[in-house]
Each structure stands twice: as C-alpha cells, then as structure tokens.
Amino acid sequence: MQSAAINTCLRKTIKNPRIYGYLRRALLAAQFVARSPDEPDFRAFKGLKKSAGGLVVDIGANGGQSAVAFAVHCPGFRILSFEPNPQLWPDLDFIKGMLGARFDFHKIGLADREGMLPLYVPCIGGLPVTTRASLSAAAAAEQAEALARETGQKGSVAEQSVEIGVFDALGLRPDAVKIDVEGRELGVLKGMRETLRESAPVLMVENNPTADACQAFLSDFGYRFFLWDGNERRFHEAPPGSARNWFALPSSRMEDFPVEKGRA
Image (cartoon, rainbow, N blue to C red; front, side, top):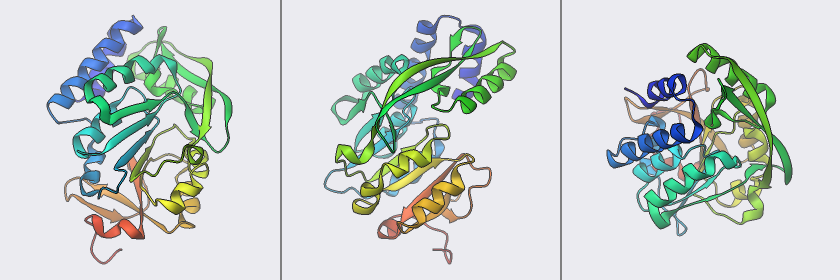
C-alpha cells in the first residue's frame, strides 16, 4: 500500500494528533530503512554533481518525507530543511535523529521579505493535518474540502502566526532545491535571486497554478524546464501539465542529467 493510502486510512481512524504523528514517523522510518521513499520524482537527483558544499535544500519540509527522499537518492550530501509549522518540528527532530549530522532544519518559512505571516492548517474531525498547511488561506480551504471528501468527515481550517525569512540572507550555496509551499513558490524564488545567479541550483517545484509565473521569473536566470519520466529515467522538456512536480535546470548543470535528445 502506498503511503498516501496509509495516511488516508490514518486520518479516518486516528483522532489523537500525537498518535497520528508517531505512526507517520514510523512510516517514514520504514521507507528509509527499505531505501524506498514514496517520493518518486526525487530519483531525478541521482545524477546531481556535488559541489564543495554538497548541500541540498528542502523548502516546505512538512513531516520530513522529502528529507528522507534526499537522504536515499543523494548520498553524501548535506540536507537542510525549512518548516515554519511548530506542530511539525517534533517530526523533523525525529528525522534528525534518524539521519544524523547530515540533516538539519530551520524553524521558519521563506518568502521575498522577512516578517510574520498567518499559517493555515486544514483540520479533519478536529485532527490538524499539518502536512497540508499553507500560507495561503484559499489553498488551505481547498485542502480541507479535499480531505473532507477523502475521509467523509467535517473539514475546517485553523490559523496561527509563523516566522518568515529570506533565503538569500542565509548565505547558502545549494546544489539542488525542492520547493513545495502550497502556492507561495514565486515568493520563495524572488527571495533567492542572488542564490540563483551565484549557485544556479537544480530546482524541483510543486506544480500548481503559479507554475507559469515561476517559470517566467526563472527564465531570466537562464533556466529551462523539464518533467521527470520515471519509466525512461530521463528529463523531457515540456510544460508542467498535470505533473506533480516540474524541474528547472540551469545550462551549467544540463550535462549532468539524462535529457531527452534533440530537445535541450
């Protein structure tokens, strides 16, 4: 059974947030031990060449599933996650204990300016579904509705304030960055201008209605845009369509990856 189906089952049956968290962590630990994370697009990073820093960044860490996928598919790289939701920090502490010194996380969200912003958390039957939280009220409401249909329980949205920072202010030089912030991706990218110019990291971005604006912004930095074909194990230059994620590759790293012939 895929973890998505398992998580749906947990949401239908578990009402205690602490027990729900324990079971979710156990699922991630099992995936790590089996070297089989439930994040198939991360296999694209197997070709990533390591710079002196050897850093991959996970923006929108949620419960640590992307950090586990990076750990499996990018051996030897350090992993740094960002997550502003305090309800998820115990999960990331667990991931830190499991992955050791190569993993760390910052307890902030990212955008193009510093400050405090409201974080919206979908709830089902009183259970906060923290992995679906968003800085967008509309996105959180959509998630609550989807979860209500999925579980047959009443959905709602809770609100709390979280700290927001700017990526460029941290002086990091990553080789790859994953961004999944439920519709706030463009703001994150605008706060990475210096990083995009100086480090040209490979980007994996969650596909949503902001994709066109994000790609228009990244085009000015020389990026080209691809989808990962897990069957062929190569990139295809194509619009996002209905894919779960899309990738942005800079010209300086294009030769590191299998790319569809005649398209790049």
